[in-house]
Length: 287
Image (cartoon, rainbow, N blue to C red; front, top):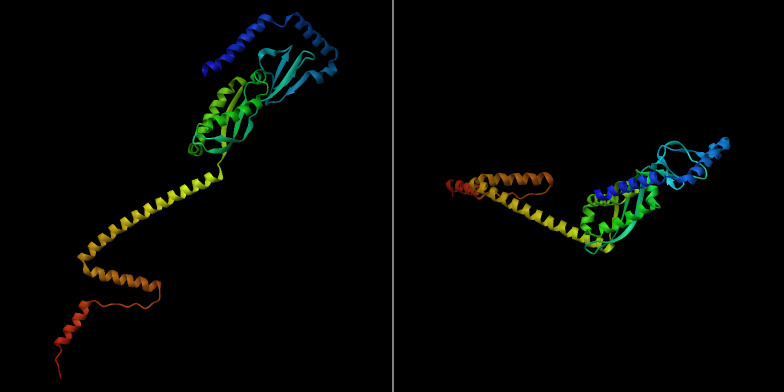
């Protein structure tokens, strides 16, 4: 990439050396002198034709006899354009928002999707944007479409849905390297929306629902295991202290009585009844 990026600078230097050697010729100087003379003759009126105002966010590329003046853009401010010999082009240096319409893409796992995005770029070299490409904005727009399709075509559906930021960064890098010769800097690429067929949406929803149900069953089974372990420990404690079982029973009855007004049959322990039987046996018989 470094060698590719270095080639335009080398070519421009070679062109500049050639221009210095060749010059504009005698006829060129005669035409330029004639243009200056025409401006001086029609001075009060030539101001409106020869002087142009370039805004702060604009640059002007002036072609004098078909050659770029000074090999650089002019502006901002007031510039002089000679009649008959000069032609200039305005270049906007502000950030441009390029919307990529929905592109129908066949993913790596043979799923048809529609993906759209947004590209933010700006022109940093007005000379390259005018001299190296016919329509810089149309070229960037078409290149962004093809790059989006090519990059997403190598990804699976799950990778597209989960790795949007990484894919957008990859597209930005490819676009930035490809448009460097055009004097364009790609600032940001965003993937807006990924549309999948309705049948695939139903299949993915069913898969997600089945996954959630399986996870819920696993969690419920783990809860049963933990509850059984706790009951085992509780039964061990109750075996060691039989009175604790009666206390737990009374506590449960209290809880039920506070929640619902109902009649509760309270069974008496057998040992209590045995105490009454022992009292009856010791009681004297008068008959």
